[in-house]
Length: 423
Image (tube, rainbow, N blue to C red; front, side, top):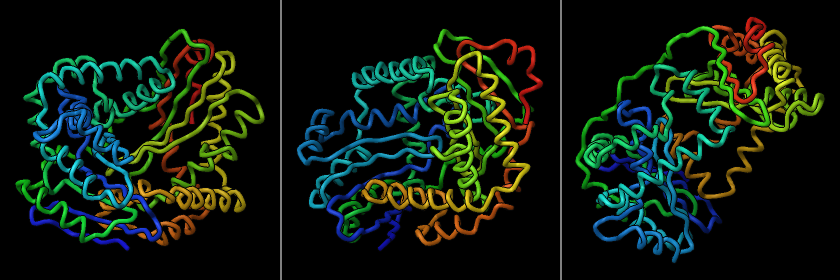
């Protein structure tokens, strides 16, 4: 039920019709995000995402909001390091109105000067809010350190300095440079008719001038810094810990194994970290691991919040569990349980048109084609215990270990005994 049409200028339109679904989610994706920004205008991609809601030649910001609300729909957007997405969800019968609103915003935004200044303050408050939330700030700190000197290390929101200084001219120029037809994927899923959507969008989007992609320099390898331990003293009730090592790109052949490895390590209530740190020892309320994957790089990150007096113990358990995955084969029953957990979550996520749309779009952005569900499931089924051990041995190395500690730091562990923090 997946169909694809490429317009004459290179814009790709892909749809997935889901029988029995009464909603449609339409997303316009641009395969350029924060990674393509120059350091002096860091945050501009996210700033543009905000500004496309602030008025076109036909609609002001209030009219955009009222029109989508009158349909009972949802209109939103998000920015990543490698893409920006603008999307709307509504009843299938509202497709003509939804496609008109979304394409008008994307193609015809006028960036009113007064709206730029108002939204500049909104983004600055968003940056302050994130900085004031320790559980988010420590992840930003980890990525800034882990990817130091690399575009992936810069925060998507930008900084107070860059957002305060970005001019309207720089905003407009960035959009014109990076929102190229060859970088645009329009994805729709749910109760959608492919030909109807082609008829609705081919005219407006064909007006974009064709051209070659203007991607930035492809920096695939982050600068090697060896083992890093960094401390940030803050007056918090907990000591927050964020540590990680290299991961894998989206297209790496080991990607299925890495998802399984992450699930076993810290991907749920039955994971080793949750059971050892929370259930057995009561060291933390929140403990988990997650993956960050990009077109040519990746990271695996572990997080926990605990008391200062037991923070060193928590770090040692994290590293011990990572080392155990590297040094020992995962039992077959644990491997099977992780596989079923992953497959179950994927299937349960596909109960809404927005999940279908996101999966469809990312499949085309990273693989250039639709990846069938059977292929995805087969990839997880093929992962063996030996694959996991080999992958852990490849990734869990001192040379890529980065440890960030925020809060009331235990000096006996993190300043005088740093040599104990090792994989």
